[in-house]
Image (cartoon, rainbow, N blue to C red; front, side):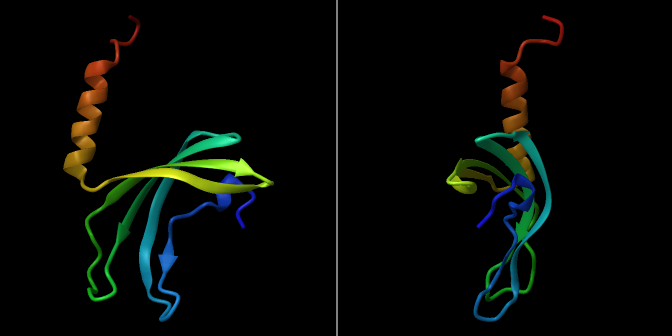
Length: 99
């Protein structure tokens, strides 16, 4: 049960063996409140591989219900290249500063 936003993590270990499968490198809050949006920077690995993946990103929405936060939706950005493409698209859509 997660009752505060700061407790939310995407770090995950294999319940059977305890090996770390997802490690959270960083997180930033886009919005805070009953509906909150968090951006995570993370790496993952499969149970069969010992190598960590390249850095990935996740945008996740959480809703506070009954005093606890529950994940509502998520989107993974699977590579730095995909992240840069998304940034370029958003910058193209945004008006210039001061406009």
